Length: 203
Image: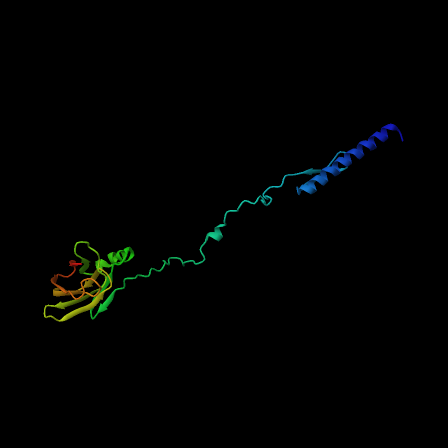
């Protein structure tokens, strides 16, 4: 074996050794490799970058919640509205519809929404301070002194829907203020137009 042949074999061994090192590094990093033919007939490993996949972030930073976790557990059907339970319920006494309440802002908003359905609006409060009264007995009599409605107001507002005619309204506080002191007012109901009566008691 001459010296030229020995040099070729040494060079080939070095080339194969370098290729093996590159292949081992590619396998360790998890990067896919592609084999390309070389002029010497030896398969050379060429590393290619991997796209579309990121390693997991183990830095300890909190991950943002997924959209699924932000969806509330209870879902509404399409077109369905959340149920609203009113604390002020419309009631009837005979043929007369009425509603009362107004304790707290939420009840006042409810009654304000319902006010268009009633043609007689009444307010109960104390003189001077304007403090509301929440328990008042309401009696409405027609022109012949026949009782049309009898109910206890659960708040300072009382609305009723009356037929057209003349009426006498009697109101008596049943709470701690003004108990037993009855006030009376007459009112004419013209139909759809609204009539308001305000009642005040001394402390």
